[in-house]
Length: 107
Ligand code: HEM
Image (cartoon, rainbow, N blue to C red; front, side):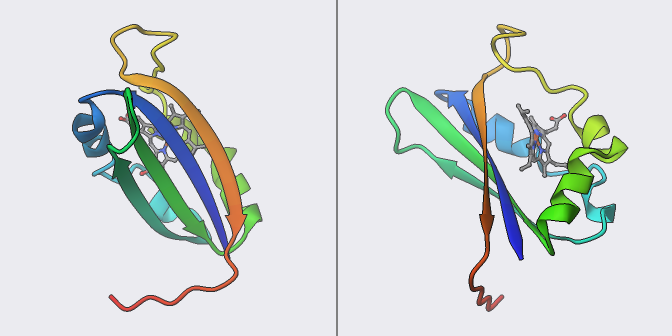
């Protein structure tokens, strides 16, 4: 299994409104090999708030297929970063990927 993380650095005070943008699924749920999605918030960092979108997949290939898909394009068509639109609270993003060595879930 494979995990892809998108880490968003946000203006202070904007984490809540930003997490709400992830409440409705916009196509990822129909992609082959998509398993799970988590949205996390951290307010422990000085000057910014951090939201991470963690996505779990059967394989890296499934994630890459989503990145190339119309579903990905469609879900991001209204997304602007602060450098493109000064109204946007999204200061930057950073993608990291992981192979999942072990998983145990009880929920
Ligand atoms: C290139 C920079 C990116 C930014 C600034 C960004 C930000 C956002 C925002 C704000 C939304 C909510 C859509 C809306 O409000 O219209 C969204 C959707 C989403 N993003 Fe990104 N995103 C980026 C790239 C990525 C990447 C690389 C991943 C993979 C780890 C990812 C994972 C997701 C997921 C899972 C959704 C929901 C898609 C769905 O439900 O179909 N994003 N993104």
